[in-house]
Length: 277
Image 1 (spheres, rainbow, N blue to C red):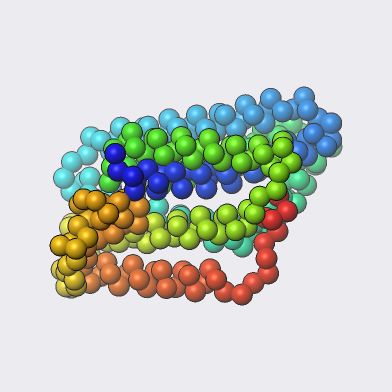
Image 2: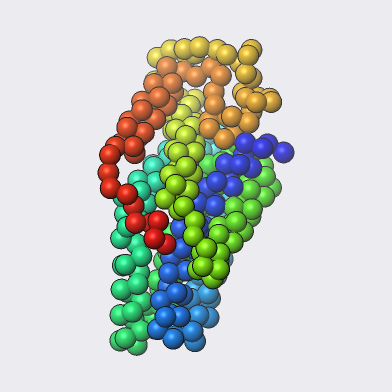
């Protein structure tokens, strides 16, 4: 078992599932306040349907890509790595900047739906929230699974999903308060490190296909110290895309990506209202 892949999938699914669970929790809290508990089955059924759609979409993608070989497989893996890096980066910054608007917007839409009797909105809102996170999760897990077995990815994913649902239940059912702003910030940092690894992974795949230039094949080689194929090196490779002998383009892209992202992420700004969830 590759522990790096396990942790990577755990972090991805936990983060995505927690975001979806918080939205579903907000919807059900508003319904409970409006004494509309009879609508709970619609919310839960819609959420479960979105989970099932995401699961079967992921299985379909895995089965489709399993048939690819050679250059087609390398092209797909590189493209998925680039796409996952882009979506992961967007997701982190979107949550960081828009979190304060999520709760009031969802509450307003639910209250309006109940007031006007448009029950379809009670079905669509949780479905869209869950399917969005589910689609992102499928993309990320495909990128991670290309480095390890599907079983390891599934194990980490199930653990992340269960923990996310448990935390959401403690918040909305148990009335517990969690430092969500800090939780999202810390998990976001780990995910951005993973995104940098995906960027480098995509570049490497496209260099193998001679789509991107190599310039210098290996700017350094520290595999004799930390081998990327075993032990600590294999763990870091699965988790953060560690490469013991990267090309110049891989190394430059990795470090410039992280430098630019962290500079923007940690710029001074007002605190997020996600603390109030």
